[in-house]
Amino acid sequence: MTIQYKTSGFTGNEIRQAARIQMQELNQGFLSSLGEKPLSLIFAHAASSRWGMLILATDTEQGQVVGYVLGAVDTGRFYKDFLFKRALPAIVYFLPKLLSWQRIKKALETLLYPARKQSNQVKLPPAELLDLAVVGAYQGTGIAQKLFEMFIEKCRERGLSSFQIPTTQGLDRAHRFYEKMGAHRVASIEVHRGQQTYIYQYDIQE
Image (cartoon, helix red, strand yellow):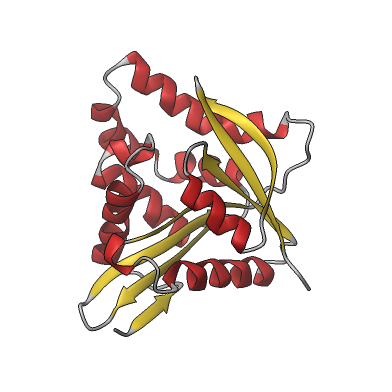
């Protein structure tokens, strides 16, 4: 097994594969429920926006993406940039998925949660690791750790000293992973009604 890590120059097919991994491995989240096209639009924007970050892990022997880490230099600005630059395709792809008040409400909660986090008493860094996922068959092989380490390096290159990691309550394996990597829990917030999200913070060493 040979794993290649890529930080730029993604093809459309690689972006779509990463979106499918989120749908498969993080299927409890609201964004995963939107489907491949809306997710691919978000991933593509993260790859091209000055406010986004995307790293893919590819099994070169199989020719498939097997893991990714998605992040933002500033989550609030990332979402604003997304809406400004991709409003038309976003409407086309997202609108059919938001044909109920419950889904519209969740979409608004997702867009507004960066501001709500900053209303907490704890001062949180604007940079954020939004998602990290590895295909089930490749879990436990060190890919997640390498993706996390590369994300740290990208943050360091951008001059960032720390970043936050939102993780849904109940995802104990994810909590243990981030704690093992050196992150510490600093806050919790209710992004969607009745569902707590734990906020971890990772401080980048010089």
